[in-house]
Length: 330
Image (cartoon, rainbow, N blue to C red):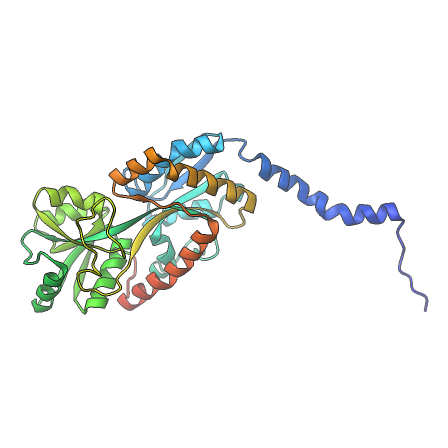
């Protein structure tokens, strides 16, 4: 039987071979021209909170770097999952992005049903800031150091009550990791924000709180609470007088929160890099870094590769704490 393969003329063969490149060319050209209109950043928490504050501090620098307006939109609710789902379902064209906290990495463990799969629905663009949480106690609590707190907590018949910005927040995870590492019994009381938890503790409703330094400092400065230790591996540059929990005897303790930028899954690499460079430029600006520091956050910009690796590490570390503690959102 004769071979029936049809031999195309040379010119036609070249055209066929060039088709994939021709099909990809418009997409590459769009990525190079991007952005051609305003970029929307969804903050999935309330106005005035940590994520919102940092996004608005970075907004001017990102606008300058991108050459287009950057619009901040608050879409809070359901532990941040409403805003996150809206971004995950948006077109992967770089015009709709998400600014989220480290709680992002455990959402799939906390909520019984989610509108999107957090582990596959997002592209990772870059980290903007890091911020340790701080363990603080009410003025009436008989402890002035972490070691004294551990001893007093072990001597109590009832568990220590502590407040955080909510179930699955970095404060909640850090506190549960502290309890697990030190062999303590805690009772979690979630609030809508760190400031509410601090005020409740100052009012005598709680023994302790694990919240950001920006939320904790006003109450501590009023004398109604004491800051015992930060949750990161190093002291906070904005509050170097506060030791770490590791220095206080909880060996190797290191739970640090962060805020970073996400996009829908499938975001083109060229657009991802452009957004990441704009984020890094904004966070690296000295004046912006000073404002972030004054608000209790440390500028710590990273690119897509480092941020992707951090999300993977924290999913394991934070996830282990969540599983051992049996944390579950309603």
